[in-house]
Image (cartoon, rainbow, N blue to C red; front, side, top):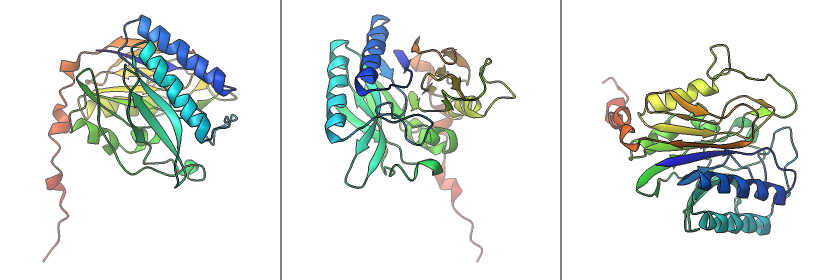
Length: 267
């Protein structure tokens, strides 16, 4: 299975963002990718950060979704599209899964919001698995994958070979320029990526925006916790990698025994 992680710069207009998606899907398809994942809430942009979020109503949501679905069909590549999802309850962060025929399989919402996101979004309340070309996978969005490892395990114990992790960390305005992946003195994000793969024995595919001061790389982690490959920090592009599905055994995830966690009560 060949997977691709697409890392675009922040878009200043909806058409610019769509144009970046089209180019990255084309590049991924040309390299044989079967599925491409884009960052968290890329359209219209993640709220609460240090950049302007694009206008995005129900009409624009539907236009963006149908446009990307058409390109998924054109380039014959399944696509995980990070977008706002407008509901009666409020605005959600979601990842829409589109197959290579342009059919929308469904979506995964962000169910564990970061505290800073409460003023902008409402959480979802369900999780689901997806399947492309016989490979099962899950999606854990940003804060979920960092702080709530059970969101990744949920998919792993149900047979996911890989969990995609669209996220946003860093800034285009200020910060530290990272130079070494997984640095001992660096932030915890990349170390958390390693743990999500190791503790479940599956692949973990984390995709960030291309930012001048990224706090984590767009990268693919093997079931043994090794960084197989990553995009250079701050560089817009697409990371295309072959994964060995048979190595994602889910061994440690399948040994999870929740019945052993019953609370002890003394008589």
